[in-house]
Amino acid sequence: MKTILRQGFEKPDPQSHASQGLPPSVDELTYQWIVSQDDHVSTNDLYLSDIGGCPRKKMLKLKGVTVDLSQHAMWHRMRMFQQANNVADDLAEAFHHDKRLLAMEESISDLLPVNWGGRFDLLVLWNRSRFWEVKSSHPNAIRYAQTLPKRTHVWQALAYEVWAGEQYGTEQPPIVHNADRGGENPSIVSEIIMPEDWFEMRHTIPGNATPDIVRTFFADLKDVGSLQIVNMCDAMLELEAWLDDFKARDIIPPPLDRAPNHRTSKVSPHETTKEGGEYVPVEIYMDRDWRCRQCDYCDTSICEPPKGTTSVLEYDRKTNTWHLKKNGRPYLGEVLAYVKDDLRLSSIDLEDEGEGGLLA
Image (tube, rainbow, N blue to C red):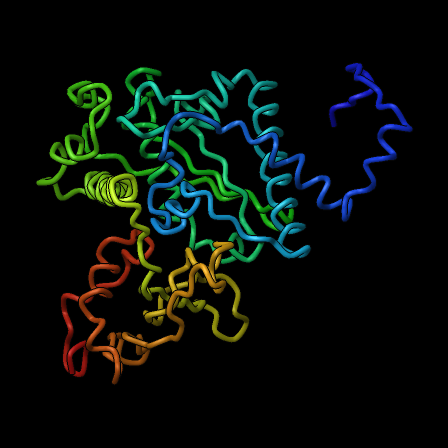
């Protein structure tokens, strides 16, 4: 912990300070300090951390729309920020001590397309040099590791490599490091899948290339790494389109519609003891978009996204097949696209429906 007393500081005048009164709470005082230390201030409208996020939330922020947080929400947000910063700082210190830290928290905005800004967390030697993105996660998210890494985090780390990898001379795919901010579970370290022959061909992508130009390099390729870059670029182009509408006509995107999600269950080779095994998908359903659950605007007069859950596909362990639920057919197209794009669902095979299967 940094000791302010050792660094020297200007002591307040007790009389003049007392006249200012006290803040509503110590938590609010701490929260205001943490917010004031956010050094992501720049002239860029969009950040790599926005990729895959809610367009409405982003444009509302650009418009300056604010929400009064409850004391509980303020406390939760404050602790989340503190713990995330502590995790990243401790990890950087550990890498530095082991002579693996090459750089940390450097801006790469000069390498990005117009309107985009960003900075990576760490550049480290782990086997060989690579970007290392640190995310703090809720203990439950770590416990059910099949939900990690989030697609938005994958795209963020992927963007560092796509636009800055050549400049920084990285030799390995980037890492997304999910650390348990509750300290209950070990970290999950995920290496991002890159396109085939990525490190041999990346120099052919022009500097500051726009997302649509980057997309053309991979649009016709079928490997997982190329698909991830295409999806990342599509998400960036969507945000850019909304930004253009916002700047030109002050248009705010609508609330997010419901989106596919999935439920998992543990399949154990020892059914009597429930030891070992892994979590596998057993249901895919339509539900409120997960991004809404992390948004201060949600369920206020500013934004009221639709609620409700509709089961679409359910897995039958006895027949080893997926079944289309009664009210699921209108959402089947969205669900099939979700299964195809989400690497966490790669174990699902919906091509061979079988007797009594998907479309029965």
